[in-house]
Length: 336
Ligand SMILES: Cc1cc2ncn([C@H]3O[C@H](COP(=O)(O)O)[C@@H](O)[C@H]3O)c2cc1C
Ligand SMILES: O=C(O)c1cccnc1
Image (tube, rainbow, N blue to C red):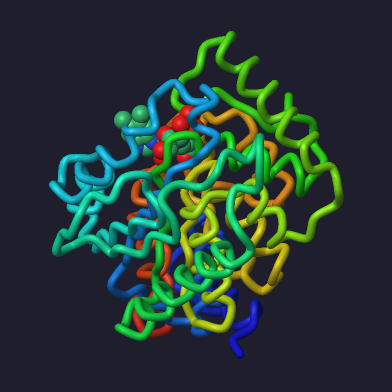
């Protein structure tokens, strides 16, 4: 097992003043620990975008209608969404997963059709999913991650698409942390003040429907989404593997929080790419005690923040692995 000391030694013997690569050094150490080597090489980055619909979307908790989820799924398959642009730019494979979109969009050669249901149910009225659906979603995520790793990748990246999923993520956050709905709920796709008040009120009603204390997986079944559950499952699969998992924005961070709660070993695999503009994201990142790499005011999702952080992550690994040492390059390592 590689140690922090060994990684620090490797960095400190490269041809640079100690610590001069700043946060890239901390990042390189984290990658080295996750890959269990002081010469990490990140291979075949895989971006997974999980798409699912939410029954709660019919309650007016998003600025957009539910139909947009399926429309965006088609957009991903046609290559026109923001994440397509960034995946192309950064040479990563884009895996588009139907985790449970409301309408069946039919067969497509590059669609991973893994729907657990056709939208979750409205969790203000009844549980979002059955325990069986929740277990299946977690398992499907695990299998997809394991398959990608078996095929040679060691860098998984996670994004989501699902109208209403910031409402679901906010509920999960509220119920796992005990923070107030004022703290947990934000504007998502761009709700105005009236919409934001409605979203909070609907979520308060949902929480009151099921006041008993829930275990993490029960919370996912009660208030979660198929795409969010699959991300949690995929992250759980990384705990035993030598790989990194790049976390996107608010909803993916909530899925990561749940995965870490279920299996704390997941934490060492996660790299938090950015702080989104969604209201609760900064507080959540602080709660997880992580410093995101980027803070660009993005609030799109789809894995776009993770994709933007990728060149920085890859750079950190390459610097650690490919830089010469003072000794091999014949550079004097003493400061005068
Ligand atoms: C055109 C469009 C593209 C998107 N891509 C990601 N999201 C983002 O917005 C949704 C979450 O916000 P809310 O909870 O307010 O619905 C998710 O689908 C998320 O990925 C999008 C939203 C829209 C409208
Ligand atoms: O933080 C995110 O990823 C986010 C925020 C708002 C809407 N969709 C995604």
